[in-house]
Image (cartoon, rainbow, N blue to C red; front, side, top):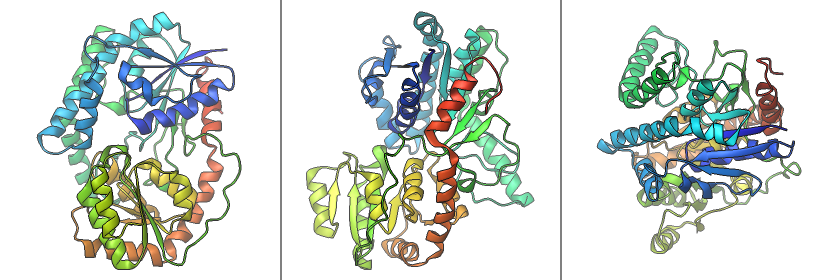
Length: 419
């Protein structure tokens, strides 16, 4: 069988989605090797997956924690430091991947849309590759805002001008990474391109985002496939959730934002005002003293990690920073969402939550009373769960990791046609 390399940002949610796809391919007889800096190795949990470390000279011990610290606090000047940091990772991979691909003798690549160095290296080596959108797809269309922008969808000329202006600002901010890619493309004899959206596979583009969770798209390529969540296949259909007398709310701000104690306090006080039980998962971001303080304020449970899909199935509402994996869990659990976006594509995810009708959003800076009012809507108005039922049916039909594995095999097998 074939040997495929996986290139992804060294961040938990991205690696875990691609790990699910990689395991599905291993179970079909393929070999899979993730390639990145050595500190990304612990993100993999399945021993059947290989890991090949690169970049020890520039991205040795301590470099990934620095990147994660910048990701956790992307404000002001630190945002530009983060962009430069990510450009440095792309630069390292552009330098290191050509030799790594030769050493490993891979037959094709699986490339996260957010790390274009994988596409560049694949093209330079003449190897087929597939692009995977673990977050919102970066594919651009006139009349749609970029996924990192907080705008609602509108078809007016004013909205179109706003979207165009925001694209120019975004591309200016990302000029360092685009410059890195242009320099390496020129050195390898590849055509120059402007941004992430121009480094996508012509064979297969696989996305976790369902059409019913996105703004209306008209110009996706024929090779684009919305398969839904990349997760291990469920052993059985989960039973219907047990609903408590008091509404149960689950709150998580993801693996990078779980340190936001002040925001968790506001959430706790809003839930207490509504008489709701609250379970908080902070992903290791809080101290024991902060956990105890949240319990004293009224949180029912405060834990580092939890069985998120199971708790969401029991809950009447999910409060999230807008992490896309949590949104997908909420759809699978038929649980309405209140989004408090913080950074990156989270404002874009929150806008799509509202557009799709499966929840509401509120600014993380809003006062407690505003948060409580929005949460009350999500808890009591039936329209959110009615719409969720429709989107959930789309999710069930989408194909998930099984279809993604089939598409990947077809795309990396030497033809541009995919099922």
